[in-house]
Amino acid sequence: MRIGIVSDTHIGYERFEEDAYRQALEALSKAAEMSDAIIIPGDVFDRRAPHPKIIADAIKIFREVEQKDKLGAKVLEKKGGDGKIYTQLPIIAISGTHERTTIGSENALSLLGLAGLLIDANEATVMLEKDGEKVAVYGLGGTSEELVKQKLKELDPRPVKGAFNIFMFHQSIYELLPFNDNFLRYDDLPEGFDLYVDGHIHGRVESETHGKPFIIPGSTVLTQLKDGEQEKKGFVIYDTLSNTHEFIAIGSRDFKVLHIKMTDTTPTAIADACESAIRKELDLHSDKPIIKLVVEGKLAHGYTGADLLLHSIIKKFSSRAILEVDSSKLETPELGLQIDDVRNGKLNGMPLKDMGMQMLSSRLKEYKYSGKIDAAKLFELLSAEASKEKTLKAALESLYSSYEAT
Image (cartoon, rainbow, N blue to C red):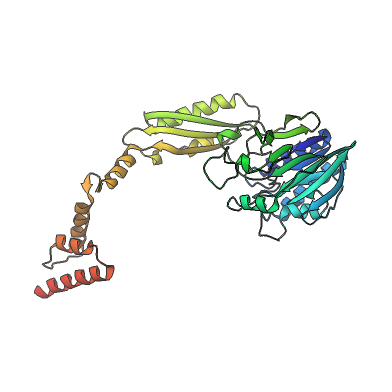
C-alpha cells in the first residue's frame, strides 16, 4: 500500500496565509493522486480556534481531495477514541500542538472528522485494507511535553498482528532538539511498529528507531524562518510492501538565510553588504523569495544598533522579496563596556556609589535645599541595607533635624 504523509499544513498561518492554503491544497491533492491512503501527523490548522473563513478554506481543500476519488484503500474500522467513523475516505489525521485544547473538548481537527472530511485517529487505531494487505495506523495527538511519557505508558499502544503497523504522533524528539529533558527520546516510543511518523518539527528528517524507519516529512509551509527550513517543502510517499519512500516537492516559495558577518565596521558598510547580498540572491529567483538577513559581528566604536536603519533596505526591496532582518547577534562595543562597568560596580567609568551621591547633590541643589545635612550622609542613609520603612524614617529625621538647626 502507498501511504501519503502530509504534515503541518498550518492552514490560516497569518503571515503567509495564501501560501499555506495553496501549498496545503497542492500537497494533499498530489498525495491523493499518488497514494492509496493519506496520514496527517498534526497541525492541519495554525490556531486552536481558527476563524470561520479558515475552517471554510480547510473544508474546500478536503472536499477537492474527496472529489478526486483516487485513494484506493478501504477503511475497515476504528478502535479506541470515540470509535466512530464518519467517512470511508482513507485520510487519517491527529491534532497537533496548534490544535490542542482542554481534555474532552472538541478541536478544529476533530470538527473536520465530525464533518466526514477525514478520520480523527487520536488515541485510536484505524484499520485499512487493499488487495488483501492490511495497514493499522495508531495516532497520538500533540500532548504537553511534561505529560507525554506518562500518556504513552497509560495508553500502551500495541501493533496489530497480521498488519503493517504505523505509529503516528506529534511531539518534539530529544535527539533532534536536545534542550529539554521532557522531550521524547527514540527509545520512549512503543516497540513493534513497522514505521514511525512524527509531525511538529518543520524540517524533513529520515532516521530509525527500534530498527525501523522514522520519518518527519516537514511542514508544507514556511513558518519559522530558520536555517533548517531552507529546503523545498512537500510530502512523503511510503510503500509498505517495498519499505521504501520518496519525497515529493511542491511549489513552495523559496527561502534563504543570508549570514552577514562583519567586524569593527560602520552601519553604512553593513547596509551596503546587506544590499549586495540581497541583489545577488534575487538574481537566482524568478518569484518573490523570502530572505532573512542575520547580521553578526561587532560595530565600530562610536556606533550603536540604533544607527543601522536596516528598515530602509527592507522597504527598498519590498516589491521583489519578503525580507526579515535579525541583528541580535551584532555587538555594540559601548554597550559591552557599559555592561562590564555595571558588573564591576561602575557606569561610564565612575563607581555607582559616587555617581549616586553626585546625582543626589545635584537634585538637592536643584530644589534649593539649604539644610546643614551632608549629601554623602543622606545618601548613606537612603542606601542602607535596612528595611525601607527604617531607611526613610532615618532619612526624614535627619532632614527634619537639619531644618530645625537652620
